[in-house]
Image (cartoon, rainbow, N blue to C red; front, top):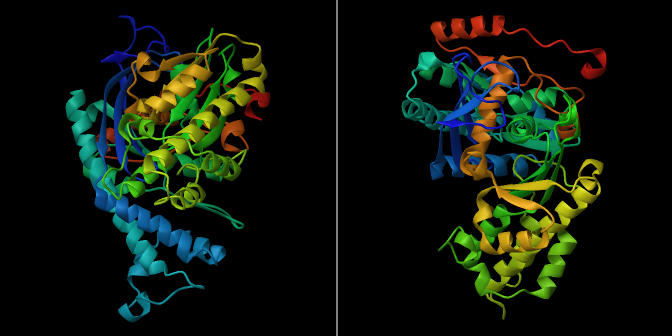
Length: 467
């Protein structure tokens, strides 16, 4: 059992914990993270404990189906965005699609969109992924030594299906909340990103404010450097007052794990999908011409995307050298150098352009994400950011592999307690609002949740704060 040190100290007089679970599906639908947290009271200062966190690999068949769903949506509808979005916005009416006769099922509907085929694939991913999530919930309860009647709600967050077009942003979650609620009897909270989209945002990153609650400090400005599929930078200024969170900023720096993994898999002809620890990278030499081309591809001010920054242009450029006088180790080394210098340059630019950080010499950089284990990346970053102190997020009692699940659990708490959880400066929403849609579980658990919500009095907000 871990007591989170920045959310207050646990005392004997504190109330019994309210238990909430979180499930986070990684971008690309590759992994599922779960976490169980207990809140001893209400408000961001209430002591919080992380009871248990677990991570799993998603079965390859589900990941493959999800990738096909993404490709189908982008490729089939590339020439007719309006027809695609209009059809898929009616995706809840699956029965109508299933009632199409066999002869009509294969026909394209509304200008090239085979709505029935899309619905069938979407429902397959939805149901299979929800079955895995159901099993994950059962194991999380067992490992946490809690019963279903002990847990108020389980939150589910995933990257979903999203597509930007001239007609607007389309987003659909991969959570079948009704199925999960029926099978487990637990109250399910999902559609966090959908709620942000409805508020005028881009759907994320919605886990930023929960991360801030975990990592904030009154004395130290902190930088969260996530070395996942994309190298993402989040600036957490000191929590000087209740409005400090409004200064949080997020920036995607460069493709990271997604680029390295794709290169490793392709260049080794499928023998390896991950360059563990950067062992292949250190065997190569930098290719100056390729590094220059990578720099030219990079774009400044990339918008957030749940799937991370695109890597296709980088891959096409790198694969042109495959089979030439350069080894695949050289290509991997060059890609790693590009990522490393992009991260260091991005951190320096972000800190120098932010007044709160520019005037503060006491800065901590918290490192998380799978690529934190890449030796070459971390050596370059640590050697070139010596003015800041690099700290592994494990020092905060949090497993990097399950941090998103912990944040999802806290996002669920905020939904139940009616606390606004999106940040206009981060997601682009017009105003902050509580995120999440609640699907009721069993009658007993639903009544407990209703009673809990009735006992929660929303904090008064003045007009200036609301605006």
